[in-house]
Image (cartoon, rainbow, N blue to C red; front, side, top):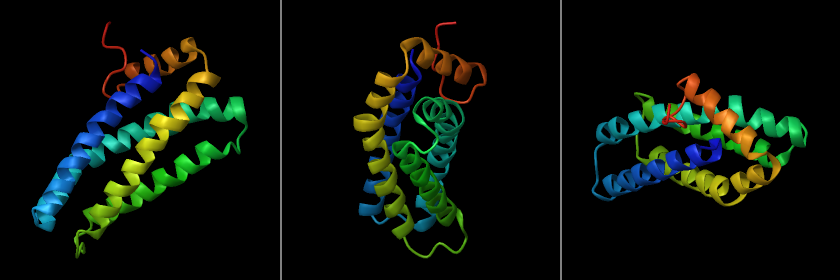
Length: 150
């Protein structure tokens, strides 16, 4: 399996989780309930981010140049998502606004990766390179398991 396929599988799971969060907000869930629901999503998002930032993006930046703007945009969004997660985890959380912003930014980020960035990556890197990244990820146990056929 290619790294982009593995990451897109996780994207699908995140979309389902974000939809559940939206429903919780519509049903007026408490801030503690929202915080509890975000916690496992945050853990998975951070692992997912690490795969992109440490394994996938460096290969693309090496190929396309260190200032390749699509990757810079994604990295900026990663930072924004992390900032919202920290705000949600804070005991000072006073409204569901950070959760709504987290949902919006992560949803838009995933959409860009699925529709724009990952197709571009698949045109730039060979299938073998993407499979090697997935294998490294699997060996380091840093995602849901890209190569489950050991």
